[in-house]
Image (cartoon, rainbow, N blue to C red; front, top):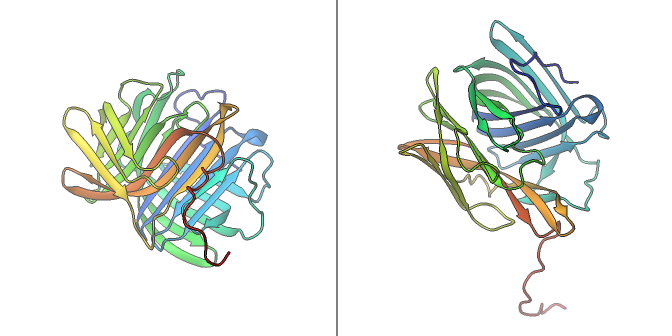
Length: 309
């Protein structure tokens, strides 16, 4: 059950909250997105571990009450957040959704229990979807534990929290970057088809937050696979580049949802990335949303006959 402190600004009819946890120790990147509340609440969790293990969970209104649980408490500007989810393992880059229904068997208990301390005041950015809802993003210092099955890891690093409809059905094409760098700075940047320009990026430096315009986010790679690289142009001279993190293989999870047409679907992909900004290295998460022809992958091009047939 979700318990959250009242926001400083009014919510929309469908409350939403996103977190991205970038754990320098032990090198995990975890995305948590929650939409709605009560019986209409949906939750999506994707966890990329440095070992190469990838876990995911998507819980809708009909999900069991033990599939996803979240609670938070605030005191003196700090907050404690606990997330527990029954996750499934993705053994390789995978695309989920369409007409397929995942089996309920084989789930792994995943529990994140962390303390969050704000690194800078929240940044009020532009409207990512032209729907009248501005983005509010904030960077936090995080410490705590991550339990995967019976194995418990101590975690430390940074987290970004945001109130943004980026991952909702309002966005059908766009990209979003969450990054943490070796000098303890951090970056939140988003660009969608709905907004031509505007301040949709926040650069956290020490205890200050700087708002930047997102000129362009270019994602290169296959339409339905792991992105090859990303270039994020911010403000007049800030450029952030990145490549997918390789840890015992590339990690990537994508979800498909109907795009409003009989033959058009929307693909929301999550990939852990290594980033570089002004010579400073870091890592984090790339989210990329794109329209695709349908829920099934294209048929492979016929090749040489199999000699064992």
